[in-house]
Image (cartoon, rainbow, N blue to C red; front, side, top):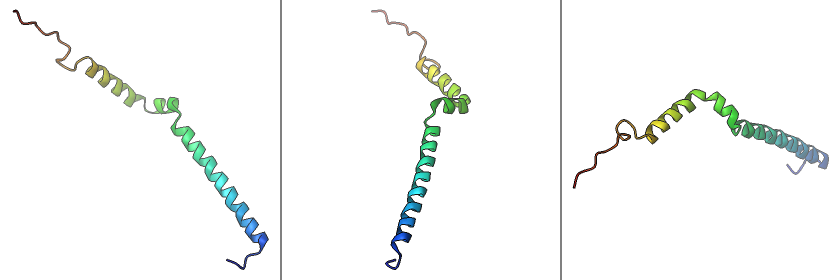
Length: 74
């Protein structure tokens, strides 16, 4: 490794810098795609609808939780 010329070292550093810049651009693109909630929502519309129905059902008390209870007479 010590037998490389300064020009070879500079070229290696530049090649590594370019590879790192390309990797960083790809990573940014991937993060932007994964955090695009509108795209995720349209891609998983069926799951979202099922989840909303289930959440509404549970919030409404499930099968028997929504029925009014009778009060005991004192």
